[in-house]
Image (cartoon, rainbow, N blue to C red; front, side, top):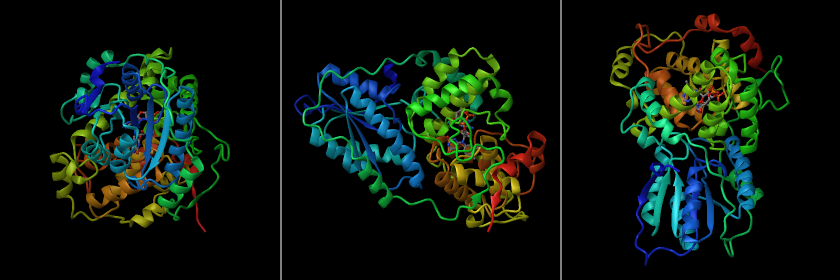
Length: 476
Ligand SMILES: Cc1cc2nc3c(=O)[nH]c(=O)nc-3n(C[C@H](O)[C@H](O)[C@H](O)COP(=O)(O)OP(=O)(O)OC[C@H]3O[C@@H](n4cnc5c(N)ncnc54)[C@H](O)[C@@H]3O)c2cc1C
């Protein structure tokens, strides 16, 4: 393992003060037992010290607007993590509450030798780590187990665009894109560890503490030709089943049937031409590095592979870079100067349509294509990538200000997308509304020089009517 993946958040306090208990891995973003650099590092440390290994996950009562649907997906994946760890003689703990309190309590209760966690650029996670670091009396390490090239190594500043990050990643990738060692059966057993996780209790706790999805969702008509009621894990029409094994199956299916045509079909929302891996990648149920390794080994044509890796590696890691170095990643303050200027100069432009958040949420606009995209998200927990761009740009067009557009897009994305609350979402919305990672385009009303997208432009690209029929909203 390349040790540049590891950062010390708190050095060892000295041998006399270090605990003699297990190494604890506080699992957060990378919720999997395989292909997880943070877990592998924690195991190496535990083996070196000849002590047991404990993995702990802390479920928080509210997380950036996540609702019961996202919590259910996460808990489903964590159940599988527990099973797999048990097989490897590694104890799994699920605790609930504020990680700033619960993780230090756990570290103290175990007399942990050291604490390891995974990397996340989001502000809330960084605040938790700061609190944990201040409260524990043990060495504390962070490992970037999410990016192929660790975020702080890929670049030491916010990148302007994919074109400025891409050459850095290309240079560094050979150093980091290595095969994962297997997680070993851990040779040191935890004596007197707690009982297995009470999953039903955890589900009850989540149901009690987290918001249910807002009741305003319209009913989507059963999709024409869509595999309604049947699970279509490689498609976009069913809510996906969680877990690493399922993620692996989705990947296998994509490698066999989707990847070869990715560069030609990915922008057609009717074609089911993308991988559908984002919820699994978001919750860390599959490693992006594993996906990149398998794609690299695939025999499909180079153009398709490169087009896919551009999204999976360059765009995804660019999003982490944005959130890591720009503290205002979800607001207008995070936009580049040229975008702030051009949007301000258009504030007084007359908006042809203005919708409230409730109308947007209920898919009640004059535009059937936008309504269909919103309905796809409400009913399936995901929206096709091409439609996400159109969807966010129309929110800018139909609200009174870019600030309001950012609030509405952020709220809807984080509440309803299974893969929401992710750097990709913050960067995607900031791209669509605020020109982040983009450049000025010919000017127009409301948008100024922010890139525009239109209904007619979509019509020229794909069968808009078919998409509308597929997700049409039924109204009482
Ligand atoms: C307004 C807007 C909001 C978005 N919100 C989210 C979000 O909340 N969560 C999220 O994961 N992605 C988001 N994206 C990025 C992208 O649309 C999704 O990652 C993609 O549609 C997921 O489908 P897929 O897994 O089939 O992607 P594929 O096309 O198969 O791509 C494979 C993987 O590459 C990454 N990827 C693909 N496109 C992008 C991109 N444009 N930027 C960064 N990474 C990318 C994702 O991890 C994706 O799973 C958003 C984009 C926009 C424009």
